[in-house]
Length: 390
Image 1: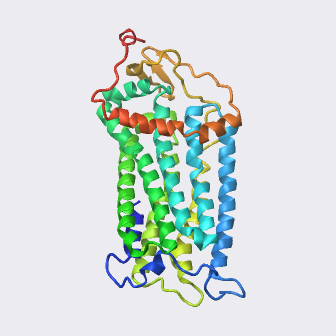
Image 2: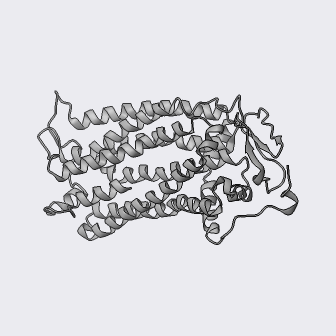
Image 3: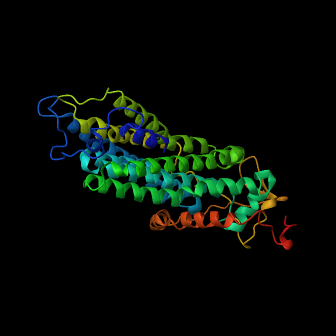
């Protein structure tokens, strides 16, 4: 992420200043007392205040998110859509729990932050796959590509570019996250020192580029299909905005904190230790943002969204008649002159919902499909016997 690059540059004072305390900043040497500061009130330190508050925020976030996830699982009628919704909802509790651990123990802060930010990969991919699931009533890859090959829906080149931009973040972030964790381990064990600074700066730059590419794949795709998506889900923009609050605000918060640190405004005091200001404060604020995000999701991730108005599904042949997709005013899909009926679908079990959510095969398939798209110049064509389907 862009803020990580700025954070690393500022923390290592590559933008200027004295680097004599570089090793201490990379991995504070004294974790025996996490507070390392005098109490603020009575026997309560600032670190304890942050810890108790973050625990409370994490508990509230988990409860609210559990309510939303449980609602989706209890009304699990649209697996191809709802598994993506559940993954998006889980963004808030993942951030809250991991960052709470980072506040509770500064030994973990260097490790939980990269892991929390890594989950953003699944959030971004889940949003993109959610949009595709809304637009194309089929899980068949050829049907999806044929649908978006239609110039009415952006054309093949547009779809290919956006798909590759989004999916590249998966293998890229896996690689950089593993590298970042390994570097932090070696630095904190005293085996690296300043020799790893260049590697960390490169990782930060690569992460920023990956995120920019992924976002440049999602937002143009969303804006191109926004009118159609709103017919299927009028609250689609609310879903996107509510989950991205934690990402956008986190960038601003991290940037402000790093600027304050660089300018000397976050100097330790008797009651505020170096660890409190440079490790705990960032993850502490993220736990609060995660709780806010969970509450913002409540009106947009309704548990019974698909109970009265299920989505239409294509059945039968592998190649759906995508060139004939049109939408009624109520959001139902029609092909040619006839509408596809969307009968009330039976609910799947909660166990099925859990398995679908944790099964990331669709994400890995997305990476593989992105690689396949690199070798295609034209969209997939429909079989001749279906070109005239109505």
